[in-house]
Length: 115
Image (cartoon, rainbow, N blue to C red; front, side, top):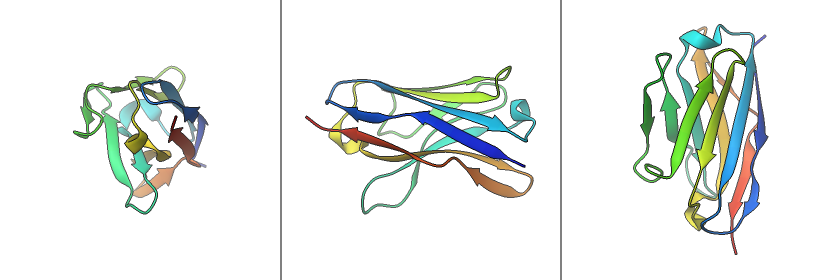
């Protein structure tokens, strides 16, 4: 069974930092691209960052230069380091993998950026 279990997140002031983690099981983690999506209140879920099996990364324009995605193949874990957070980064963050012809999602983590 494929499982993605997230940790991290919370409430932070503008300009602060948070780190999200996503531990996976049930897949050959090292061969898959891992994604972090986010969904702001009242908006559609959007792709924030991805990291390929070879370690190449890509970011949405809104987070580029502030967020860093990384992976640890030995621990089957993907992380998202978020720096210089802004109120518009507020939302629920989800890790995701497309594997075995299906989308698998973490349980979601609330990130709130507010003074």
